[in-house]
Picture (tube, one colour):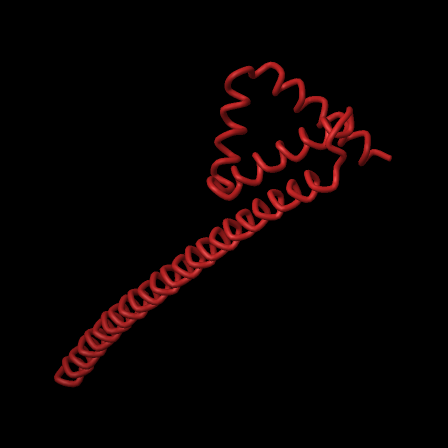
Length: 148
């Protein structure tokens, strides 16, 4: 009987050790999961910051390019003015083209891409029907061009 009691005690103490090992394994798994979650959050935060930095850099470069294009348009307008005839129909056309280029160049220098987007938005909002028809026409032309 004493042997049976000892076997019973060793069996129940073995079960307690197994439960203790399970609890330790659960705790270790929770700690590992928490650490992995923390690493993932840190990595995601770093990636988000890098993406934001890259977007800011691209936006800055785009604005620099826009300013440069604006300056080039104004310079080209000056070249047209100096080389175009000053009288007659060609003179009037040259002056009109130069004025338009200079206006757009100034607009690009002062307002950048945001100004262009605002202008397009306002143009579409005022008379929406012509803008929709122009869009349909451009879509048709593009479809015909790429269908061939």
